[in-house]
Image (cartoon, rainbow, N blue to C red; front, side):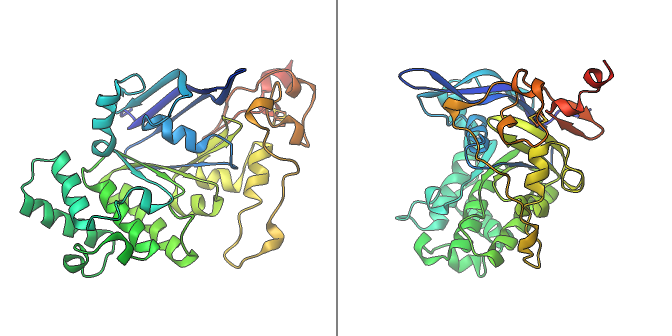
Length: 326
Ligand code: SF4
């Protein structure tokens, strides 16, 4: 088997408060292969953005990685000194955030920002870096890129700015791109274009993409596999079509029922009663147990570990055949 681009094993992230240490990520493991788009989905507070920040080494104190390993093409990166990690960010891992303005400096022409990034990560001269910047802008669908390259961020629409950020993320031909809610701030029609663009990255560049979103519709359109997160754990992971067609985990079932159809069929929207627990009040056993219609005694006592079911893996006691056979 070829080595995954990203390999996360038993990752734990904690945030220290004055009274206790709160565990935001509690032992998650997953891989992303070359050219693969993995969607990480869940409600707000599930730990999906924290997972992305942990991978790029941007968990700020009082948060810290409290256990596990993160490897990029085999190289362990979770314990690198900040200076080493800074070199990897931008060069080997690209980032796309929800608000393009967090990645773009409003005072500089977009071309200068892209050229500077290209020159930081390659040995190209000014003129070749500018040519490469124009090519990248053309690739991400900026019309008349040879002219727009001299524009400032405020002269671009939200969707066009996000395309510029994607061009910026591609500058150094990274192995991995972390995209955190990249379409949330955009109009629906623009969202579809950005989704198509992200999908193409994997196909054309062989880039591995970790796409963090609360929107199952975006996952369905974009991803090869999906990890459904709940309370800092992976409830279910598997090929996106399988998980949509045949979700196993009771939480994933509720989430899949909430994918709006293209026809805007609101009747399909299913509400899962209750809310995700706060970090300080995660219940014992399965964290989903207070909301789960199928919960039984064991669910309130013992934490369910991932169980493989064909191409999917599910952390739910209902699928523990050794238990039911006993
Ligand atoms: Fe529901 Fe129990 Fe499965 Fe958790 S382990 S999802 S509470 S059945």
